[in-house]
Image (cartoon, rainbow, N blue to C red):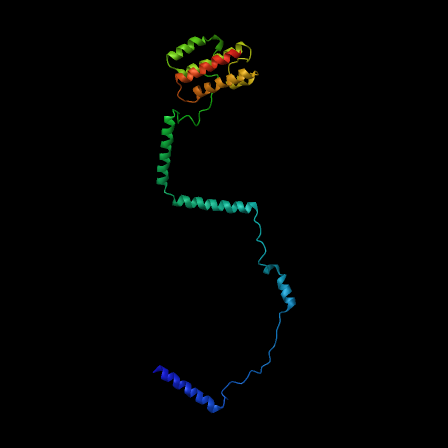
Length: 231
């Protein structure tokens, strides 16, 4: 049915055009075309206007401006962290970490309550404040070993080494001086090297809060016996 209507419309249109002799076509355009162009002076003026130059590099910020921006960002981050942090979880994690550290230090025989603030005491502690030339070191060392006081025994061996150095005039013994003071007084390489090793074991045993056993004392004693042959 639609096809018949379209065919009927085309026939009527063709008949109308034929009857009018083609006068139904619109007349040709006879208007005059005016050519226009850009004003070159105005174009150059616009090109040279710096405010219209959108390709220039942005202004460089100073270090102070960068610091203020960074500080402002840091403060905002901290405030956001404080406002959103679950402090109960943080507390639990902190306590757990401290407990692990305590257990590890306990297994290593390190006192967790003194390791962070204990400073190395000078050599003038305990019996060192007295005159070492009046000590019977062999007897004191023997008594310390009988009581299994290996830390004290190592300390006595070190003091005995100091006495030998003073007796041979390699150092000047004086109460109040430290073991490092005596080490700096030694000029002979062999004496200085061996005494430095004895000093290491002395500080390790006396100030380190480590477990000192008979094996460690035997090592120090052997080192001392070998060292004193250089006197």
